[in-house]
Figure 1 (tube, rainbow, N blue to C red):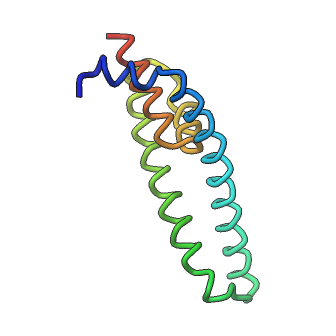
Figure 2 (cartoon, one colour; figure 1 turned 45 degrees about the vertical axis):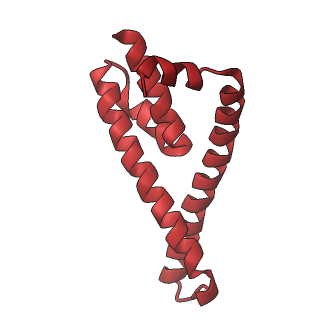
Length: 112
């Protein structure tokens, strides 16, 4: 797909509303995943076990945390190429996910 068409789709007004909703939901879910993992770690240190029925939640949150971590690393790399603060943008991308990478891509296209 042509990059101008992609940018036009991404900048469409309805996409902006969806993007905002994704940012809010993603930040909440990633924060919940971090808390969930911390509770699990605390439980491990204090010898109490979470029900085996909840193991699937741990797998989902670990996958989400790892994938968002990878996105944050990618964002840090590309942000550094744009002479911006990589730490700030990678933390932002960690919490909002792919939307942060899309915003970074649009910023990069505007620079070219």
